[in-house]
Length: 484
Image 1: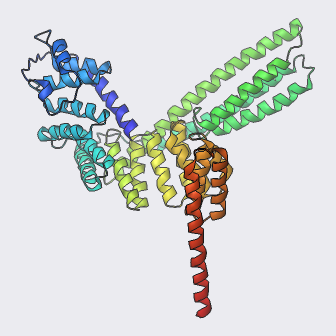
Image 2: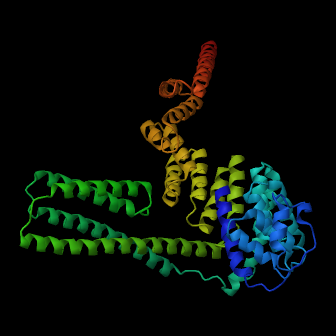
Image 3: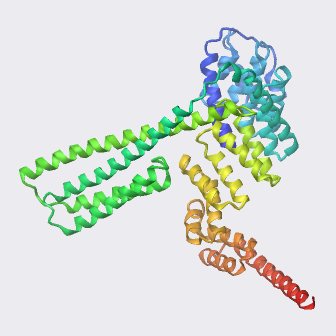
């Protein structure tokens, strides 16, 4: 959540640099910034010397410029100087709060965002951010109040929109056409990749006296089919697709090394022609992939708008996505998984390709013991961000929970040492009452790093205690049944 908030903050700040760069209001504040309760910079005297060189300087513009350079201390100093003569203090306070939040100073960030609300009590962005601050601090009741207020404030934008058709909704025919285009593009992509494999085979058949090339060709053809199948559901950045493409590159390189027999002039001409067709085929595959992703995104937007038009509580791409996501987290904490899933679904319509939201959605299904949908959304999250560690961990735990231990080890090992992966698997098995499996995984963790992995020893002792309690409980229950 914090990474997404920081990214959004930098996007807003860079936009602010562009917008406020045209300002003409000159501020000449007299205040001493180092005494301001919202200042926590390191060298105010130095900044004072830098920023007072020009008597007519606009401190908001100057702060935006420093922020664009990543100079948070200088930007904070300039924004605080700008408050003395700023026409829109709420915007400046929002920038100040965002800097403090980025630096992890939640107390000063909260003060700044509350200053925003003093002049703009219904500021959706400030309400949402205050909710995030309190969610991180585990002040759940307060966080919920801010998230609810942010969503309530956002809904005011939609008053009368349904009647006035301000928001265009795609017709059923348009949505069906988009789906038809997607099916066609998937077919084109699959056929293009199959043709690409055939062309490689034709290149190799010219002067092919080495039987090993045929073996490579069959493997490459199979991988191309596998890649085409993957790309029907995922983008080229999906981990499985990346792995298959990597295997293809390696096999093609090895095959080319084997193809060292000199060719005749006629064979060279044929080979050159086929390679030209191959280049065109690759371009076509790339173009089809790009068009497919665009159509899939268009479908998501069309369905979101159509849903919004019919919704009792409307929202769109500008709605406070992290307020919906935050309420989903709170619902999960309360065990209201159906409510959480509904909130995450709304958030995913607002932010179409968020790894974080899809991870949270998958985790709700995981908590609700719906393994199929949990894996679906975990994989979708990794499709959007293959390096999202939290999802790799969750997917590994899912595989452990469902007894797919080899998959669990491979998945967890992507984001942690193998000994830590075994320990995590053992811990989850222990919680499930699978004490034999837990012992085996703890032993493997200890075997890999006996010198420092004390946690596995502690968990092994805990597992022994839980096993004895389980046996005692089972024995007592059996005795009671005999007595009855």
